[in-house]
Amino acid sequence: MTDADWEYPVALDVEYPDRELDRLTTLLRPLVAVPIVIILSLVSGPALRSEARHLHPAAGGIPFAATVLMLLFRQKYPRWWYDWNLELSRFTARVAAYLALLRDEYPSTDMEQAVHLDLPYPDARRDLNRWLPIVKWLLALPHWLLLAPLCVAAVAAVLVAWFTILVTGRYPRALFDFVVGVMRWWVRVVAYAILLVTDRYPPFRLAP
Image (cartoon, rainbow, N blue to C red; front, side, top):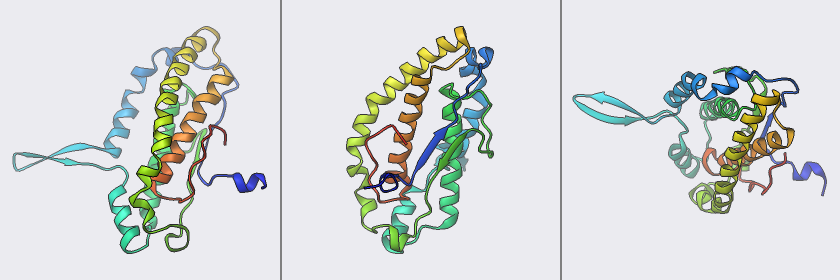
């Protein structure tokens, strides 16, 4: 089997900052990230909407249930839903990379910057099994169980990197690759089980 046969259709890559990072914004990252985190939360939901003295939940975010029903009954994946999911996922990845200190450029709401995320647009009738979305969340359970401790380890790696950047100005490459790898694994599972853009089961690996 060739390397191309192993290539997974969902790809995430973050360019390594081979330079000194900004120590001040690194030190204050939880504070300086607040505005962009608020913006992300507003477009990804949930939120509250007031109407006739009552509060009703309102949300943007991923149209998961609607996509399941559309695939089940119509075997269609509307292009504008895909475009929304792709751009929201890219924006989320940029904010996550910033919070993880992987980059010190402030996250853009629309420009790709140095965080590259690609999702395939599926031909629903040809590429997707109409019944599989009902059980994908269950099939992905082994991944969620493995990702839980990996995410804890990634947070610990970011804390170590935070101290290292403050002292040396550099993000240790091994820690950088590990944190990006956990993000990549997470994105692949989300693309499979929640975004529903592929039926290919995600690999159990951090590498591209």
